[in-house]
Structure formats: C-alpha cells, structure tokens
Length: 206
Image (cartoon, rainbow, N blue to C red; front, top):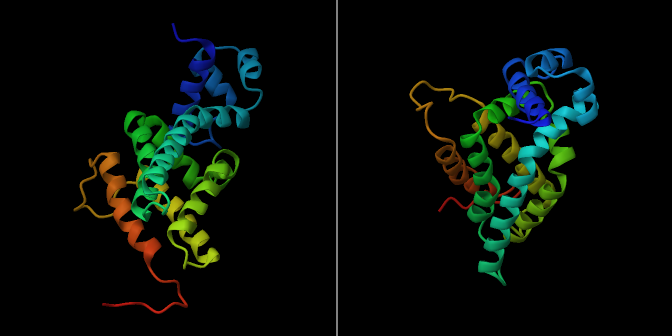
C-alpha cells in the first residue's frame, strides 16, 4: 500500500498539473487523496511547502545526474573545458529522462511556467546548480561577456521549459517525438546560440 506522504504527493502533483497550482485547494487534495487535514499539515505544513516537496522529489535526482555528467565531461576534457555541446547535454538530458518517465511532472512544470512560478522554483531549488553551469559555460566561452552569457543562460532555461512542457507550434512537427529526441534537437540549437558573437562583437560570416 502507498504510504500517506507519497499518496499526498502523487495526488497533488497530478492535480496541480491538470488544474494549476492556484486553482487547486488543499481541501481538494485531501479529499482526492483520501487523507485527513492533519496528515497534510503533519507531512508538509502548507500548500507552498507541498509544492516544494513535489519539486524536490524530482529535482534531487535531476541535479545529481546533471552534476555527474558535467563532472565526467570536465574530467575527460581536462585541462581544457568541455565543449558547449557536452555542457548542454549534461544539463538538458537528465530533464528529458524525468519528463519521459513521469508525464505528470512534465505537465506540472508546464503549469508552473504558465502561472509565472518558474523563476521562484529555479531560485529556490536550482540556484547552486545554475551557478555551477554558468561558470562551466564561462570557461568554454571565455570571450563572451558575462552579461551576455547570463542572458543566454536565461534563454536556455526558457527554451528547455517550453520544449518539455509545450506542444509544437506547427502542425507539421511530430508532437509524439519523445523528450530525449526533443532535447537533442535543442542541444544543437542552443550550442549555436551560445557560440554566436555578442551584439557588439563582429560576426564571422565565413
């Protein structure tokens, strides 16, 4: 039998994803999970704490997988930095694995994006990892100004979230394309974007 804490997490993850965080009440979660109010407050405290627990349940393994891949890429390339493509793969592919194996969580992240909650989630749960990756990109792209690098990292997060959570805009695109394939396409796209000259740098058109 699924324990009470996991039942609450699974139910809240599904309802937040299907209905949105703001429109899903704790009472609805309690009723659907068939638990009492005391159980929710005992395990999580508040609705916001419950959301944090849902994110942490997936964020921990994703962060560990990202850093492991980045460590390997850096060790293999030492004393030079790894190429931008490998840095991007280490960041994006673990996210694809989670989305592929847990569509409910991908749906939840889509809701968080549309409700404007993604910046809070990134700040609270991924900030240290983000700093590590910014430094990795900085070593791989030493001529890219810091502010420009941060903007491109910001664009990368948005593109990743949209690729995971959004449906393709054009009907000609296969909407059933699996998440790892989507992310590998995104790696190719973003690698070129990160390598592009900054606005005030000359563009080599050769």
